[in-house]
Length: 217
Ligand code: AMP
Image (cartoon, rainbow, N blue to C red; front, side, top):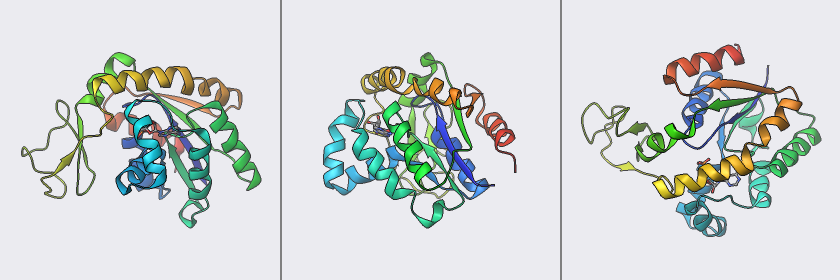
């Protein structure tokens, strides 16, 4: 069965980690609009220049730019068996554009999964996170330190990155943006009978097991 999924939830709620696990297990790509934008910023492209300040303010990049980016990405051959949307859609107009896009290709979403985490847990989770610059493995100052300080457990890399928008001030703005603009998508998908909810305030492996139960084999 094709797997066309949306992982929804607040910033720092663990969508990215879980999307990577689904990608590995089911062979469908994680499409993270945040990762695409960060790559554009790093490359210094026109899109990157436009997005940088908006991202650092914890606001949203324009629907038009984002929808065009996704429309192009899902025509790639690797999306033939499905995809996991991570961080998209983030507004009702983006969701409507996605519906239209899929309909024009004769495709449908299989599920929209909300990973729920209370706000008070998110600031601590986001401000402590960092990743290996070489292999992308994720770590956390409190919850998941490398076994040997300063050395990546997976690849031995010694350079780590922190996102420019993972500071307390921007995180507060990202949370407000989420509640104001993205949370209204939950009833939108509930009305379509697609919404499933998972408690994201638990051990990562337990959450993965819940997601697997929803996805099946
Ligand atoms: P994320 O990595 O998903 O937390 O996204 C990081 C930042 O990129 C967000 O705070 C937004 O500024 C921007 N962004 C990512 N996805 C979208 C989207 N679907 N619509 C608008 N802005 C986005």
